[in-house]
Length: 386
Image (cartoon, rainbow, N blue to C red; front, side, top):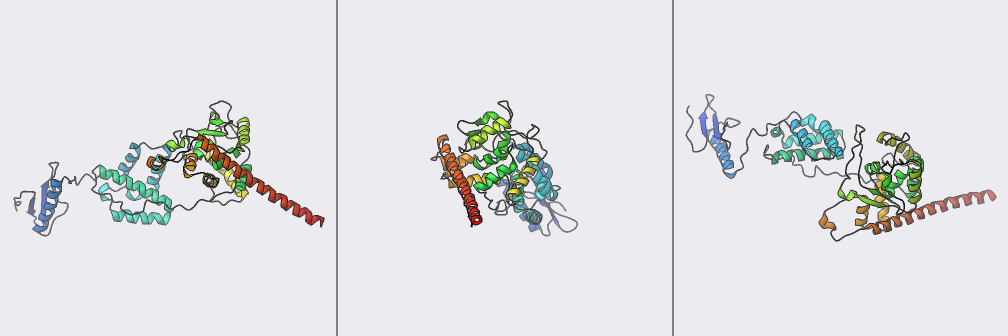
């Protein structure tokens, strides 16, 4: 049966009795409908929809989405200007959580039901934080595919699925910080204090050089970061944000800690590393981690207390010492929108004041602990005399 003449597209009846519709796309290619129709009116309605999309400029090549998701996702990571640690994280999330489900599918085959089922399955086998990160990555990749006009709409439409609700991190006391510093030993005690009273990130401490230490001002300059990848390789680069490049004004009691560390453990050249292992090499996360776990157990802190939680401890103690939100942000090297902070300011002098407040708090806590020990000792002695 010859196709019916129409202003847009063609319809013909097949030997099976069903109807096939065809039309010329915006690219000039003659395309059949992806399915046949039971009635000629259904075929006619489908052609009308295609014609409307072409007139509005909304038409997309139905074959454009026939791109393998796995190939597209890995290329997506490669084409972005990501830090070494972020690129490593994305590839790990893809390998472990996303590609096993979507790696063999084309972009246009991924649907909202597929995404919902995948997310529900992931929540059964891994933590909520990992699921949220994986979902955000999948959504970002699919959003780029939408911008590239490979698919019509992003299949990731679950409200709130990319949000993380991390548990409140524990906070150490001043006495526990001192005990951790003692338990870590003289080579690593300065790292504990810099994490708690800086507060400096681990990757920032790994990049510190002897020249970054200002003994007179009692502080260190943070200019770079050297995170360690899972391969054990260091990835030297910039700090987490521009705000990460900063001067850390430290409490006055740390002057002795800085001088002692420079004299005993730091490499001797001006550009030498501030922290090196017993063999004079850059410290490894695995080796340091073993020392940290032993020290944590000795002090009696829970296993959930990570070395990074000393930074959270520092935030808390800084706030308690009277620092403003802006003061805390500057010390932590955190950035935010310029509009929210345009009328706030925290200069180096103010940072010294915050450090002085920290110093007073730490010294007061130490005196209190010492007084309690003296009282206990006196009570024991009086009991013996009686």
